[in-house]
Length: 271
Image (cartoon, rainbow, N blue to C red; front, side, top):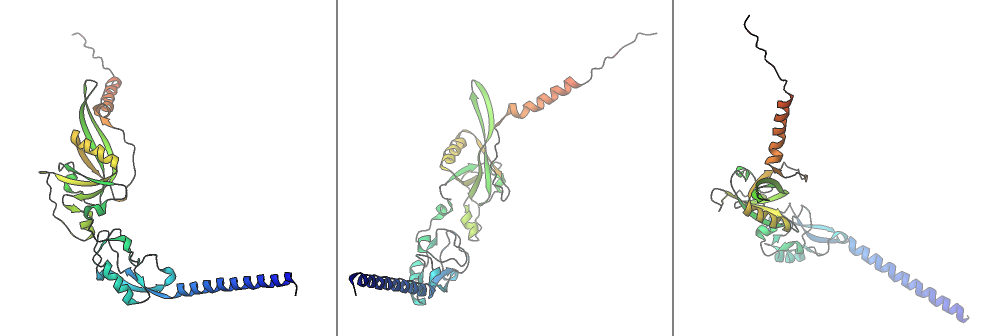
């Protein structure tokens, strides 16, 4: 046997060994993925901010390939129950759907309170509004509103009254001491306001809108405009003043006067 033949045989043997080990690892991985694993799942929908209690979770057996990274899971039920003890009583940072696996990074030991209602990138600010401006108290947490502002100011030496839509499609997170979290938990809080006869309305807004609305509240009068369910359209509505509101009406009256036929009365003398 020459040297070249020997090298070819050795290379073929090495390739065969590598293929064997690769296929063995793949087979072991596939076998491990198919093995049943106990995992903790939500027995029913868990609202954001809700406490994790035994009646809301269940242990389910699924193939290992379908276990999410970091999920509360173990090969046996005792291992899952041991991990559950560390999660029990914590608060959900996000809504958890029925059947969804419980992930510790979606839980918190600290109750977030109103902060749990803040959408990502938004802020919650509160405004003290008169009953008429707050829709007579009929607005509820979870509704969506536009904010209308009216301002009386001096412009180039003349008094100017202007009304404009300051922000649109804002989420109402609280009315008085009632919040969206209370409604999710089935609680009905008695609305209490610290604004005299008015209502304190909490809205989720962008950081820019929080500054503009705070200034508008100080310098003008704010009013809420309630949207219908599912209406999220952003409209281009120009500002209104006495000129834009009364101008068309006054021009219409002038046109009516100009278009009215003139009648000439002829008075004949006595015959």
